[in-house]
Image 1: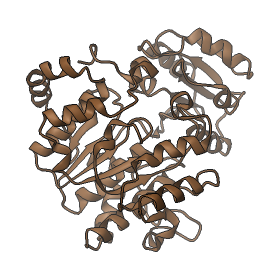
Image 2: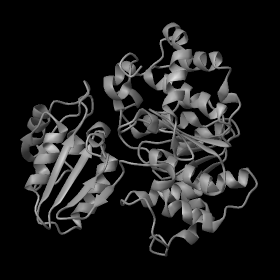
Image 3: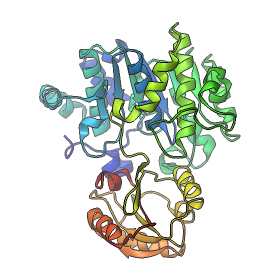
Image 4: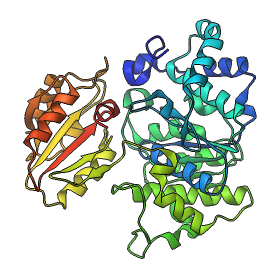
Length: 407
């Protein structure tokens, strides 16, 4: 199915479906599992994967059997579909595909549509208490938008997939706001002047109570007056403060809707152990050693801003950056943010959609970024590690498929 069905991460825009017809048809054939489950729906440009994992960890710590659907995957397809941190079984995946092959041939779904239908079927079969669902692309026309959630969450809005979602923050926000449902509360993580009116108008249209993360006072006790955590947390990286604030605020609003009081010790446990509880990977993996190593799937302007701001206050004598991107992404804003004094190892993931490493090198040269190109990620990574010395840093950033080949 991975090879047969159109897949956005591999094939790009041609795999994106501009309506919900296929997923609705799949759900009907599966006896509408989306109508028998309780959901938390999460959209946004950056942070939606982290917030999804955080929400799942908090639900699990409170004793709920929790489904988690995220995308894309780094190494194993089953990363996309988990219950209480455990991957869907290989047996279930094979059984689901075999039993529904005729339906797939008839409906011709995308890979994402098939994957999400599988998740719904699995969560229903396993009788989860709640399912945390991360959107794939956008919101309004995203395949996951057939669900009716307990709460909708929108993390933030930045420039990404502008060829599909729109070329302004307002247009992108309008697509993300498509997950707002009639009478269902919505929590937005970040105040942004360009998007406030969009969210306000959409929420009013659907009679949905709109809140921002900083309007939920219960979360203040988790942070110092300076905005830092009161205790160590599992998710590292400068951008995770915003994500954790968003997830905590959303969880408190969700708890209020479901009439229970969150347990501070259980929330603390969830935040201190998110990665082990949910099997999360690929976000700000930092290792100290003979040289330091940072692996992070930052691949757009907003994500890379956090990385470059963090790097600016570090004291490494040299920085080695392994990077690769997809060919349908506008890179000018990204490349102009990257440090010109770093040594670059330009590469490409093993997918048709990857930008050719030599083309990336040539484009980067226009922004004074210098280095060599490598056709294979493993060769670029090996070269960076060979070159790195004590007091230096090796970084792997960019396409999730580049990161997936080194973790």
